[in-house]
Length: 261
Image (cartoon, rainbow, N blue to C red):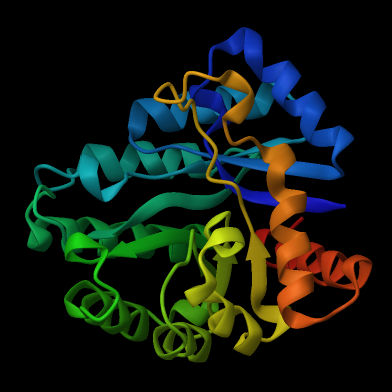
């Protein structure tokens, strides 16, 4: 069995969701974490999680949604949501240092406050850090994140860098802080990631699809779904040269431990 640690299936038309879950179960996906990107979306995430037994919720405010300082009302709303039984993680949160992104200082404050909330509620975080033009040599946002993680002792609650596509040196900094690395489809086609995958200990890896409604793909069958997680596990097995069943079991156990199942 395997857990899709980061998806957005609640954003699909509701009539599609049972079929998405069914296809996932057929591919050995036991649980799906569907993550919100703002307060309203997080409420929808929780609604869907409460409706389906093997779906769980992440609540959070995505950095692209932080166009003004996060208010006390926002934090209180997240706090209330985070107390629900099916909420397993504060997600999706992060920092986006890109040309069209909101002011990085405002993002930083929002990121900090959401991690503080996660610590108060004893929930892990799932986050991303994106630099300008996805430049993996750039380190501005990464350094901000590392400083916040260090100050707030992120290892106390744990978390994972989602949709990781960075280099080994950055991955190691995150690992040293007690965080995990979450891999998605890019490892299948991006050979530059293979060195990073090979160096990360198996007990520090989880997987995800980051699946959401991909309307830009005219062929519905090409949309990424939680069922595709098996392809990611297959690739990790190939890169690390570890038995497929063994690596799946390790990744599954990592997810269970992180998400407190």
